[in-house]
Image (cartoon, rainbow, N blue to C red; front, side, top):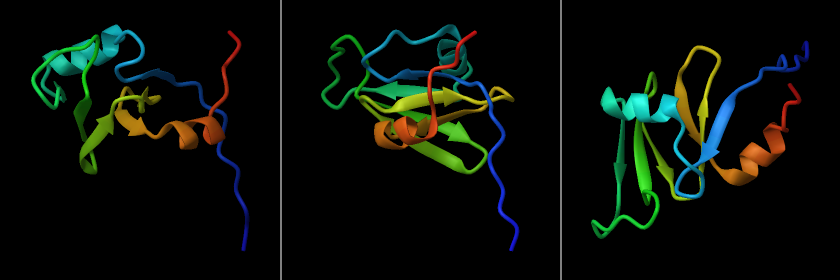
Length: 92
């Protein structure tokens, strides 16, 4: 069986609740493709979780998870350990 390597792709990402929400995330929230929530209704500098509409259905990103904007503008959550194993900082 043939083996394949993923092509290098540069994406944008941030950590939910730990970093400022970028414009592309705020735009998705305005378009109702993303909703942000707090467990007790209190805002403590960031949301506790976000629900993200994807082609595969609704995905939940928890506080501290990465939210990635893919090459076609799609958004998806990623756990920090998977993100660290998959991505590295891109030098521009």
